[in-house]
Length: 289
Ligand SMILES: Nc1ncnc2c1ncn2[C@@H]1O[C@H](COP(=O)(O)OP(=O)(O)OP(=O)(O)O)[C@@H](O)[C@H]1O
Ligand SMILES: [Mg+2]
Image (tube, rainbow, N blue to C red; front, side, top):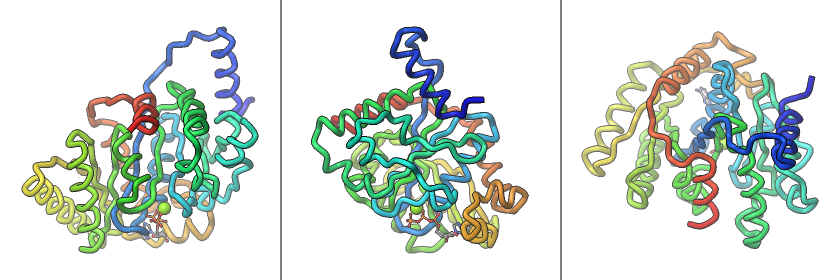
């Protein structure tokens, strides 16, 4: 049987040669997982949330866009064969840099090559995003694992995505940094959909209280409505899974944190969120804003 990446590549070749109908079969939603403060659990969340969506029969691609600190591949214990830099250099397709992880989860590693993306000339940047655009309709979700904070790159990803998942811990430093993200993003575009995830909570109550306070502050001072996806307990299974280089959802599927992520995924899939422009819109914004 062909692996997922080969199947996608075959489909694309047929599409290019006109054998397949050019209309995309479904919408591809782009989610940006971000945070104000670093080290709050974005990458672990992006990976395990992605795997949890796969459990719900969704096709998911995780795109590691964390400049310089890309590490989805490290969490999976799977080193990529090609990077974005070699893709551009050797004129490869996006299918040559997609890796297949466990359970058919797809991922693109940032690697060092990604540092150069925004410094590339416009033609190369355009070529890269055009390639990425061929994934429209091929996967249900593209999850961007971004870096922390208000860098130029991060803001572009946040403003271009369909939905933004903002990860914080209950610590005041993490909360105030997350709030700065909301403030900055809201000032640039009040229509960005943001959902909060409170990670590393000592109790469910702490998670709920943190989310409620955050929501209230955003509404009161910015007039911005923030959704809540839920909270994840502080759970030693997460660092244990990291050490094993296996995703939590597979290494410890019945752990408290895996159950919380699964529950969140169920709720996320129930949400009737307005669809923005999907992958095509994301690419337009990345190229022209
Ligand atoms: N719920 C949790 N319980 C316990 N430890 C956690 C939890 N979530 C994440 N961690 C630990 O926190 C550390 C940081 O996690 P992770 O790398 O996912 O954060 P990050 O936000 O992606 O960091 P960076 O900003 O550097 O990209 C890891 O060592 C991980 O094991
Ligand atoms: Mg990270």
